[in-house]
Image 1 (spheres, rainbow, N blue to C red):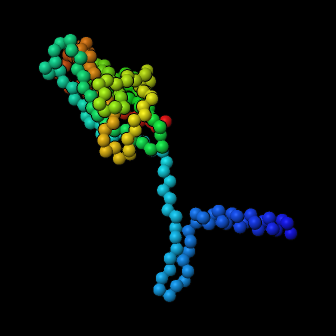
Image 2: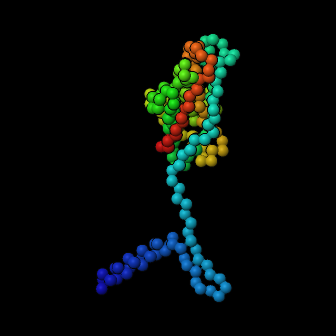
Image 3: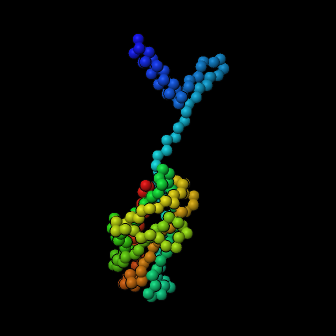
Length: 180
């Protein structure tokens, strides 16, 4: 008898707990019937990088002995993370190597990259030997409606002054963000 009562009490308690979040069914009615359904959007951790644009550097008008540098803004958005790290990989220089190279088939020269999570920054943080940079916390929304980060690219004078061919040098830089 005690076992039956305990089982009954446990069943009623479980049903009440589940019923608090369960759908309710409508009753048969002459002109209408209604019920309810709890709608839940399960939100997982998500991260995105947007706003990247092609970067063009030029030797035109650059005095000898002068580095060629530029930057571009972008957005890193996320939800479910307190911060993020970034990895910068060069197609010509190799992945996970922190070697960044421009090439045209004849000449291959090194360039430098840096990153900061402030779109107004005047300088950035250079990658470690594996191409990564950690410790960023300025996350925008997933829609990335405003830029919140900056990518810096520099070709040092000694590199661009060693070019022997007038064909444009190119590389593809892959920017990977990882939430943490």
